[in-house]
Length: 244
Image (cartoon, rainbow, N blue to C red; front, side, top):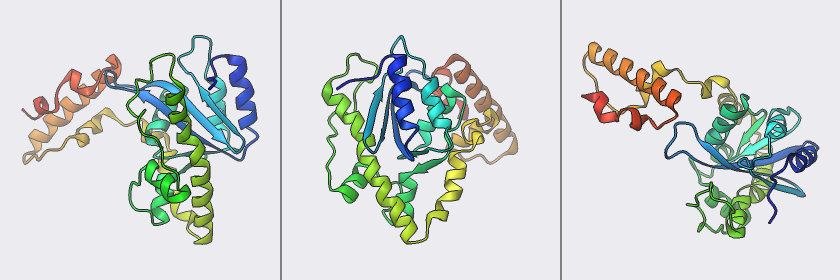
């Protein structure tokens, strides 16, 4: 299975995708030792086209991919889009638009809250996805054919899922129900949270105003440090230490 590793290949495949009405998109990344996710693989598909892009290849610049993500004429389809979009915002300094999140659409169509991709694919297409490569170290090169097939399945099956959900939304006249959620997903503010709001991530009960003020200040400091040093928040200061 071929992976795109050169600029010429990337420009060519992006040109093909730009002729599509929609593309399905997924990413593989790791962030165990960093604050910002490390992008390791990009998967894209459309009817009749599919591609795996290696963002770690030394001779590749992702500008064509980001151009596709910003193309208003091409709908970008994700499942549980938040983390994928966060990566694109961080690396490409843009928010993909327009966007369709199949997890949100599935909820609107009655599949339940936060339905997983595997479950949704099985319910819509009847296919059972191989999960054995789920815990791959996506930085490793070369990736095996089995790992690449697993990654590509995240976008190839998504085509039928999107088409089914889109038709269902139109049939039930519920397409407008997604607008508010998609507006949030495509808002730059969603991906540029203020460090002063970092305390809201913490699960705690504070009874005194002065306690809250201290926690807010410490959590904001930790957030800035973690971003600047590109390390997990817990590497700077554990949650428990903020409470003490």
